[in-house]
Image (cartoon, rainbow, N blue to C red; front, side, top):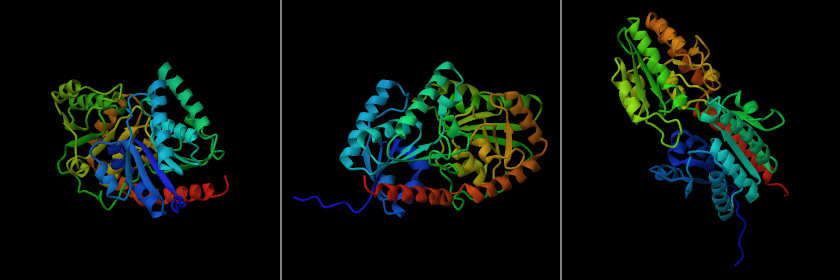
Length: 386
């Protein structure tokens, strides 16, 4: 039997968790389909396989854990992914987030895959931590990135302008596109009316891990309340057992016993959060690409109170779409909250500006157009002679 040549270029998205792909990256799947690519998604399968398959992609289960980047774990993941890429006869890989970029990128190198899209969505705990171990990890990542891009056609996607040099990527020597995170749909996240009342209701929507800085917000709101301001804080999200510095349920429950603090667990529709809160708070310690949660809040007309770190400061201009405070500084965060409690009108004005900022450069449509261009360029480059 003669195998007929395949007419479609085949792309494999490599991502550690199906829920993460569904929550952030379905626009990229649609972009790949729109340029005529045959799409598979290689991921750990949880509860979201049907969502991916309903969009015309095929899911290939991947048996890996996100917990760490240890040598044995990485080697095992590389072997499994490389075998999958060979079996599926993949032409292009699109690796999403740091672990998948390392393991999927090296697997693609081993498997002889000619086209690689490497989407670095931030450095996570590796970038947020200032310890010796984290510094050594960042050095190792730079070496691995150099190896990954040593062959084939490679294109990096970053979510802010600071991350490329952090990971040893020199523009324009390496093909790089900076995208507005995963983008959001402004027709789904529509402007919400201001929350009535003179009090200030603040919310954090994120995984409950140390790097996101929820502890700083709890302390800052407690300080503001001690100064006599009517402010409250709601925490939406759950601990992440795969993160070595996940917050415990005991800690979150203890915070809920403090005046004005309430841990409310997971949320299925974030629009409900912003219908009842005034300000999106993201006191991250760093390691962000561009948090989707702040884009969702901004699209709903809510300003963002965050720290002056890459990603967050790429969206929030201090005093415009929200406010930037120093990293790991609960006192400065408290001072800003107190100032806003005395000037709620500025909260409404900043919320309107945040919505406009999303529309001007951080929508799904804009990100999809950028990514379609990357797919077209790589498809053209790998279609020539070997």
